[in-house]
Image 1 (cartoon, rainbow, N blue to C red):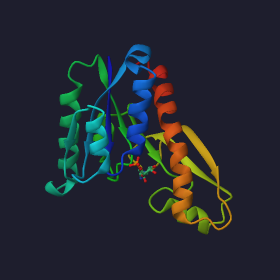
Image 2: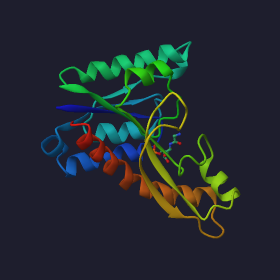
Image 3: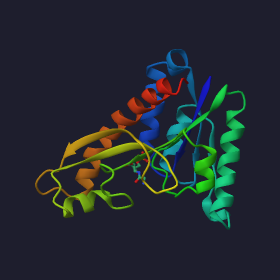
Image 4: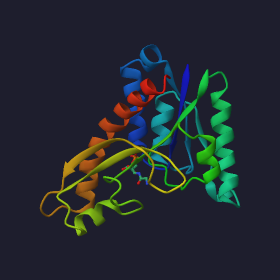
Length: 200
Ligand code: GAR
């Protein structure tokens, strides 16, 4: 069985979409994969409640309790490894609205099994405030990207993208909401493709 560990910081709607797809489509039976747990770096992340309601193990690791990024990341890695005991292949780690930059050591440890969803059509608009930047640039289309995580922020091989129109008079909030509905379809779809391709 291949484990999946999700890392969140906020509302957790992408996490919930993946959990719902895994249940609805019986990922353990059809893909040999199951959700092992959800880690948040914030105790007040709304997604934690959603994860608990889904009956999933959760962990809170507050990055502010660690002096260095590397220390926080090794605590993350330890929690992932703890849930992963018993998995026949190392866990797939999914950043789902996880608003921390992960260290090169963390990336190296999970190389080839670490995915992120980013709310822009990469390589355009890495970093923050993607929707306002797309509006300001006069883009006619915006969207989201699921990519493998590498040491360079919001880079790495692209596994899937979803495109939405930017409508006249859009605010960043309206555009973000339009993109987010597509993220909920895109991320589970890409995770399935990734699992199939990586033999999980
Ligand atoms: C999503 O739009 C995701 O793409 C974005 O945060 C939101 C999280 O929503 N991620 C990033 O900006 C990562 N740099 P969610 O918590 O409801 O899934």
